[in-house]
Amino acid sequence: MRIVRMILAPILLFLNWITTPRGVKRPVDLQQQIDQQTAGLSLYQFKACPFCIKVRRCFKRHSLKVETRDAKNDEKIRQELLEQGGKIKVPCLRIEENDKVEWLYDSNAIVEYLQGRFANQA
Ligand SMILES: N[C@@H](CCC(=O)N[C@@H](CS)C(=O)NCC(=O)O)C(=O)O
Image (cartoon, rainbow, N blue to C red; front, top):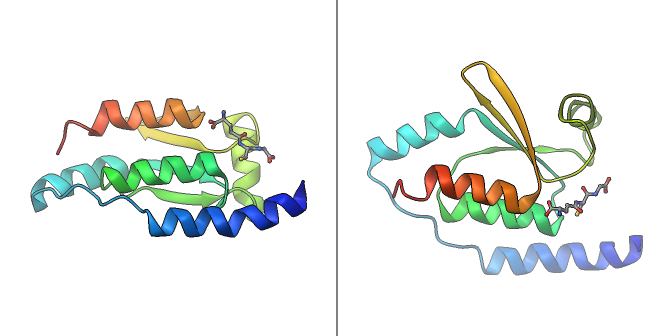
């Protein structure tokens, strides 16, 4: 399984790289407003996880600047995810808004959340 993953990971990353979606272009002031909103978001992820790639492509498509945090290699980040999110499962979107923090698991739920919040702000 580990070997399959080692072979698949670079292929997935390459395919993602050559088919990266074009980001939506917004007027500068609107993009700044969006950037302020996305400053409260961070994605706990593994670089080559296909579900994480799906979420990162959604960021790209909607031109969302979201910090990504490596829950595979960074022990501090991994512990944060486990202790505060509740489990080691990626992708997980940490949403900080009005001093409240929510941990959203599952790529479909994350994409749905991002589309609901940002897709109509073109
Ligand atoms: N249905 C989930 C699947 C997520 C999933 O299976 N993630 C794997 C990585 S690709 C994971 O977190 N595994 C836990 C681990 O490897 O410790 C989603 O769409 O987000």
